[in-house]
Image 1 (cartoon, rainbow, N blue to C red):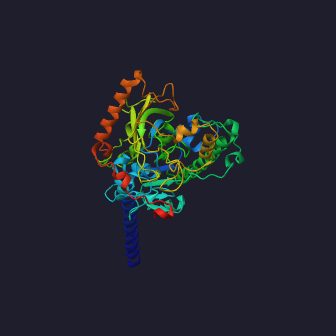
Image 2: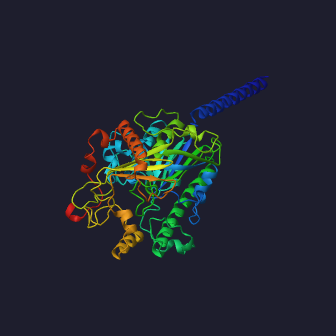
Image 3: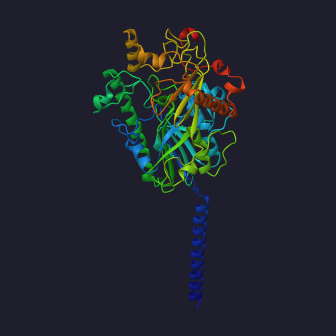
Length: 487
């Protein structure tokens, strides 16, 4: 009898233990579900000096961009995406803060120190529970803060995900130094590109040197595209692809004369494609004018965080969530862009070449605030050393200089000559912005209207060029390399 009682007792204990174990496992599973943060992940992929329209989705028949094209077809392709400024540091700072570059103090110039008083979307997301980090080029060039403004930098994409805490959403900045100069000469040809198929814009001479230079740039664009493709395949293996918004773009136009540092389309217009699982209708092309400053408030809204009132960018979620193509938001009919000092490119002072522009579907209006200065740098040298210092050295730059010395200055002057205070281009008849019509009587009404609209928007967004204190852009320290006598 005692044996049977003991048996029943231990059986009851076993049952109770089983029930207790089940409750513990259920509680743990329930708690784990509650602790899992299901907000969308963010993969932001940005190239260094990759400009519009150099991608297959935009009709370029030579450069191969299968990753970008896949994002566009599985998401949304933007036809009118622009940076805030065509210079690395201010462009990237504007993306990080969601503010126009001119509002960022020292952060509005190349090779500067990031101001202490500015919030960045990666830091905000990290404080809200996101796993945040970057790979390769994020902020800069310049001096970062003690707490990295784009998140901790990792040595590889894999390392970022290996260090991700379980259950946390991520925000990852995948940077690249491609296609920044310099290039390996004839790398494009060696990869199989045919020079006769390269499209040379009409502001360059159509020579073998220029075609080779463009193809070498294309080869580095393709390398960036490949890197982003590898990251996306990793997301797929991790099972994170469907819950990740993927943004792929460049920080400004290509590093050629009349491109980078200029407010023409080849300086400030960039490729942009966004994919987000089943959350947005795929295969759409949008004509809305967007600024990369719009990305920060977009990412914060995705994370259920109210964007800061300091942000001048506007969330893209309403047009991403739309089911239509074309112009979705009729208020998105223009963008404003500008620049201050890129390098100390003048010969006798540390000033830059200040300009602002407003771009609509039909017109581009540019205001050159100090037209007595050289827009690409002084032809006899600069405080930094080289001539035309605001154009990266390369074969095309040398070709333009050589042609001028040979008595054919047209292409040289388009890129390097002085410019009037006002520039106006009719894009319907002049898509490459070569024929300035600002002085023609029939365009006076249009010129006045765009000039006022630009001034109103600059004033509303506290641009020092309108409100005072603009000289500070020239006075801020330049942290990049200078000639020995200037250091």
